[in-house]
Image (cartoon, rainbow, N blue to C red):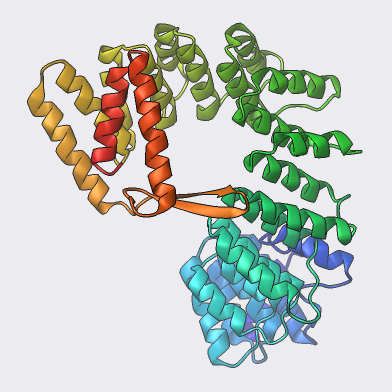
Length: 468
């Protein structure tokens, strides 16, 4: 321990990196800790020093000290994995974890929590299997990993395994991740069952969990149920207001979203950038242009918030939908930073709606510069070139589009109808539900033709023919 003695003067007691703050908070309320099996003697100082080194960005010193430790228990190994993972040194974190397993050191739930941040779900599942004594933290971590990676079905499958395993009871954090999985899949019947489980366990007073329920019902299309839960909340935080506001906006209830924003301000809740994005988007869809511009001005003047790319994109969309496309372009030119693809995309959509091919071409080229794999942009450019008689450029755009489509993984979406989930894959034509879907598309195309929107129909038909 010569190295330890040389470095003890640098020891500073700093907290464990917040790699799993929510889980740690829960474990503390249950008199648990990731370091519950505390090492004895010099290992206490060495492990604390490793944590301190990582907190100060001294990963090399932490590794040197770790290598000199004669006795390294699961706590010391976890400190190394956590330290690397918290600093995005994922390969090293995974390497330490694999070394830990080779030495037959059994990982605990907190080791696994860190590993999940720096590896694939396949490797995470293998790591999960090595945990001899699984608990709510390890189960919840695996569920959360699947949910955050957009693999909702896998998250629900693991949750089912958890509740059927003897001795494991889901907690608030488990249900929050499971609710998010239901929201992402838009499976309301499953979400309702989860909601029932939350009520039966007396967890429906947990603020974060109730917020996730609002989000889930809104994403599943039941804005009435989301509003009911929101109204029954005895206490609301910024997330509560934001979730309800986004739900209103997503379902076209722009005026309700604006009214909710005003109510929130009267309740002395200070809005942040996400709230302003929600209310500006709602104003855009409801045609409340002047009110939206007033909110935009208040972002800087009253709340002293610096608008980001997303807020500027919302205002460009607000102006563009109202036909004030030139004003939208002037706003882009006045931005204090270089506009990203979301801002140019909003302008492109407005040009498309209001038939401004010149400005649309400029916006489309900007989008392709920043995000060259967006198929719809190639479709639009091809149509613009064709309308101008530039057939060679139109064909070139079509060729580039086909190359991108051939490389892309087919998109997939799901919808629940009468307690049955239907999946739709790009280019799929098999199945009775697909027949009904194409029949409905045919009716929509016919309706669009009747309102003299043939150019848009041609664009959509071209997209479908090319597998978009």
